[in-house]
Image 1 (cartoon, one colour):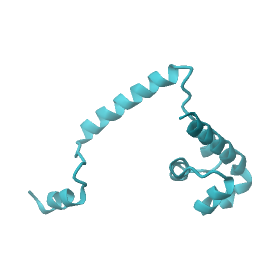
Image 2: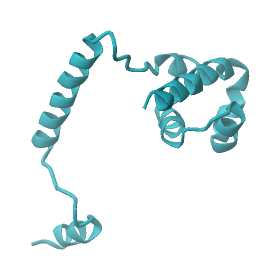
Image 3: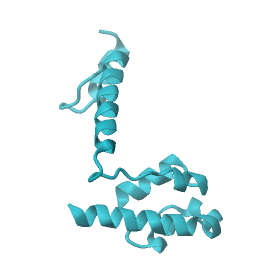
Length: 108
């Protein structure tokens, strides 16, 4: 084993699995196919994040909002200060996203 391979093994958690690009692509294609099936079911609504992108919210910020799950718009701006610069244009859409997230949490 090379030094790089040994370092990689040390950095990985014991329960992790190392995948090749082909294996990862195959798994992602299966997930995408599953998502397509779910999107055809009228009872299951997968939230669309494009409106947030149209208002200057980037992918990383969207992920932070979804993962942290802030309850108020003020929490969003406190956690992600970069959004304050465009607050006048993104506040409404972020509030809608928070409502959608709250509805998803409530339905669980």
